[in-house]
Length: 86
Image (tube, rainbow, N blue to C red; front, side, top):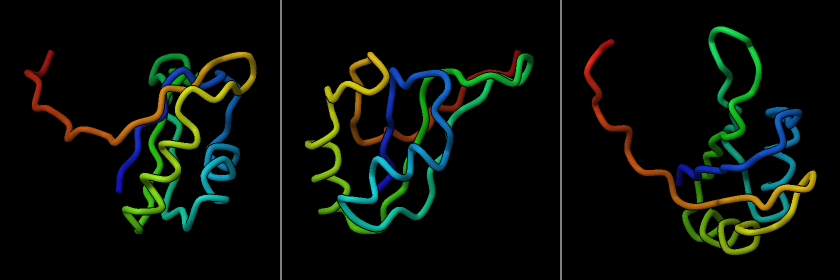
């Protein structure tokens, strides 16, 4: 299951993101999305969990949880839409 995590504190690392989800099951990958120009976090990321049941449990447990003074927005990631090139 691919999980979207929004409203992350900008200082969150990939490893810290993975650590948030590990109590709920195995984490295949965790990635904070970075701005290409500045190299800083965009405040959201994605976590992949191989077990859908564990992924759903993590979503229910972490959605709305406060981290670094910010309430996380956690849900199943939607497939990326094709957008026209700029």
